[in-house]
Image (cartoon, rainbow, N blue to C red; front, top):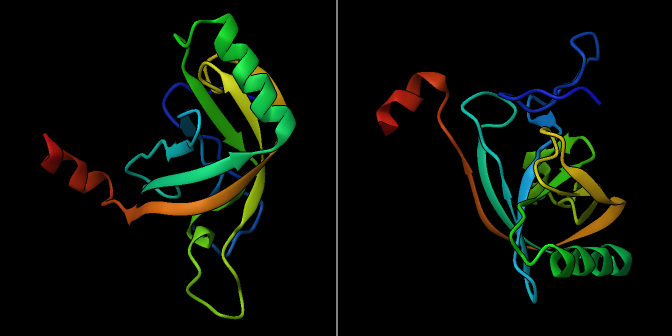
Length: 146
């Protein structure tokens, strides 16, 4: 997988998508008894969303995460590289289309785009609760934050 230091992975330009929010939505992983994911937002589609999820990892991924944390004394950053999906599908706004309840992801010690080590490949991540979901402004609005 190709790495980029300033942007997340995007679908190839020749691959048609009707949903502008589809992408590989990298997330920061925090917590132990309760595990939370925080989307790594940017001021450009499809990553212009601030999302915080409470999740459960499958048993193998949970064990591997605990083992990694024990080995590295909790001083490492952990990120999640999920399969490509539409981030807006985490919300159920259409009764005919339920919200995304789970997805596959690589659990990575370090940053998944900056040489991190995959500790659990293809882990099942179950969305227990969407804690926060907000679409952010575009690049022209980013200057307002300074």
